[in-house]
Length: 473
Ligand code: GLU
Image 1 (cartoon, rainbow, N blue to C red):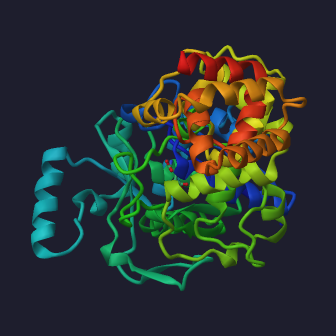
Image 2 (cartoon, protein in one colour):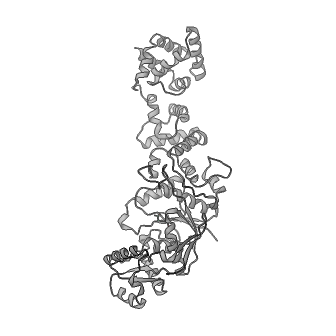
Image 3 (cartoon, protein in one colour):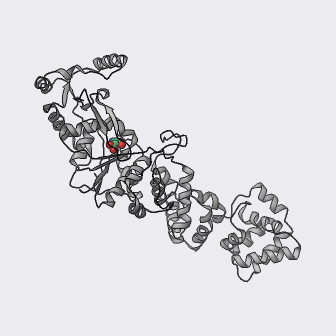
């Protein structure tokens, strides 16, 4: 059996990290089996529809390298891939269930329903919809004559529905506790349940891998599969991503839009690697691995359910690791340059830019930190903070001589610069801690900067000498 997986996001806002997370596992499972990974847009809830959201979901998937095999964008043999374009279909399926006795037209008004619901709640059972007891042929006739009706699933009143989830023990739902869910609304629009099941079936989906929050919908979906006489797909409900306080991940506590991470200069590789560790660990204990390696060793059965925390600090750590240990220097320089260009920076990708990048990479976790940390590399107008000014003021005697020695140093590289400081300190009977900080303060305006000889070598002789001279004048 070929494996077909899918994600079925609703275009209701920013492209969510949860969609990327579920996308990663679905993409991988399909790739491992040489199967198909589908992106379907579930846009039947017009009230929550956000224009542009769909495009941004594609862009997110593309950025992460999780490009689907079939989607509204690239099409495919199972299209259309937007539920709003499959609209006609669902009514027929709903009627088919009415004909087979698994669903019924229901004519209750919203007011009647809320009264029924109140009574049912008080009595402690699910609502009994009176239309359930109508003669089906008669009910269909009324509906066809134009009377406002929805179509509801006729949930059996006895027995249980068992969800066999790949990641859990069987979950038992008592049918008597399941509502007769609406399948088709009065305006002819399907609900999530009907459209989701019909589309998964028509698109040949074999594995439904989705977030835990859908688990209570699954018995309804199983009842639908049975009612249609279709085999169930494999179910796997992934653990929800959580905030640090273990609540479901939310915008207020964690940025949840993948675009935010993109704008901060996170690398897609780091994001994927991090997401792969949400509910799963590499069998050899590897922390850093790419998508291909993930695909090589991942097994759905190994997903663990303890609520994985989407920890910003950990994601930053991953990103730093990729910058320092995975990407080449050249790659970092190019990507950083592209990131800055998108932020309207006009820094050229020249030798100097590469040298500054090389120097700063060990101190960088995300690209968005770069300009803040490197201001003094790009302008002679850099700010000098108080501590730095004090260091300069305390060394007015030393600085001119140091400037002139630096000016005359035969080769201006880190090794020679370091030796120069040592010789100078020794000659003057001073500690290095007296000699170096004022120079640092003069060339960078701060006492916090990379290793001084490296810093000076990167800035270059001309800037260094000029800046020290200017600082004491
Ligand atoms: N449209 C649902 C969502 O927004 C799909 C859930 C599912 O995968 O079945 O996530």
